[in-house]
Length: 262
Image 1 (cartoon, rainbow, N blue to C red):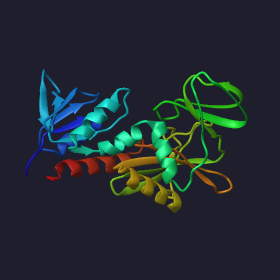
Image 2 (cartoon, one colour):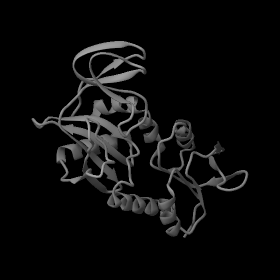
Image 3 (cartoon, helix red, strand yellow):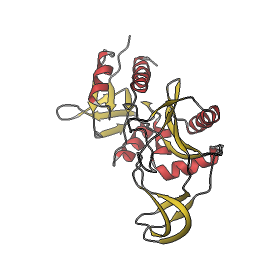
Image 4 (tube, one colour):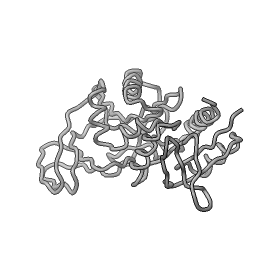
């Protein structure tokens, strides 16, 4: 078997150890974004230890970092073997542009507004402002009445209901009920759990995933008491460590991918 030199970027130590035990080739491992060089069609990655760079054949990237957009751009220009697909990550890394694309694809859209930074807006219904490119409930604020934005933000109605995530890695899909003590819901609370998959939401997630060319996805929806459903957010790097079942599926997918000679 031909063994490639692979780079693991953003993979945490526990997952790195599992991958290392299941791959006989050379691995360059960086928990943070390394320096890279794309030259004459070859990707060079900063050495894990020491000075200099080494050519790599495959890259596995996992994580969201302040400075990762340029890194993902370099991977896309390289156009080599990378998991997930860097072109799809470019489409989805900027949260609001990704959401605009998804709104054109989803069966469950809703109208959103926009406000520039340092601009006052007045609403008579509960409204949620979202800004920036982070997930996990950050960079969001619910308000009613007069509100002044600190950043350019999207505006959307606040929907009462159950927040759920349809998540896919490899050939496996899950539906997760998101939880939280206040209106912000996420995958992290202890009472977040798997639930029966809503086939309409699954079909919608598959459609968005396929159209954007993604290898993994986590779509957040709200299911209202009257049964209406709304797409809230697209996660291009969904959390894989919260549930062991998801972690194992991710590791199996990555290990199979890096051991594939093509």
